[in-house]
Image 1 (tube, rainbow, N blue to C red):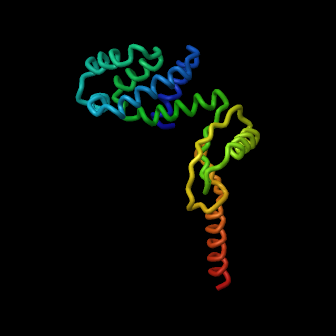
Image 2 (cartoon, one colour):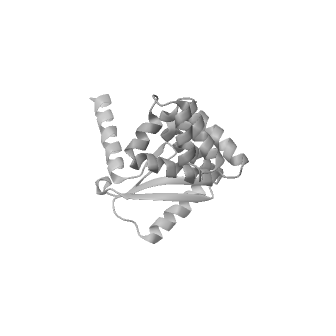
Image 3 (spheres, rainbow, N blue to C red):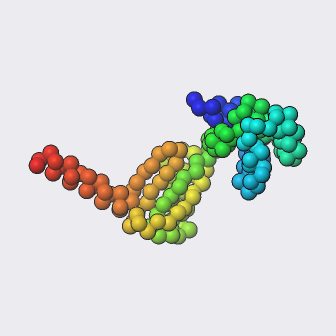
Length: 181
């Protein structure tokens, strides 16, 4: 298990105990956005040259409106000189929260923009197939796939695109020509 997963799971346990899973997620995403938009803050947070005491004071000041679990999480990362894993730990924590609530986020790539009716049909079918309470779709359009759809979720890729099928046929033909040739 990676360090990011270990920290994320510890945070998940603390936030779940306090019944603030989603609130902590919102707090930490907000902090991540601050880091992304403010170069000086980003350099300060990720620096290993700044004293623990100074960092703790800054984290306290920056996070006074956050939930206790989120504040403590950031302090523990800082105290243990593990701030570099914050983005990965946040991603893992979000996965844990989504799984807890039975939500699955799926990236769907299609050749053309699907209608609302098609999006709803995809959502309904995926909800049944994946046996979850809620499917969150991230629809993207890529004309290069020619037709069909590509689905990505939880480290799984399902390529139902025409381009993918053509590539599969091409590979099969190449393999057969090598075997019979």
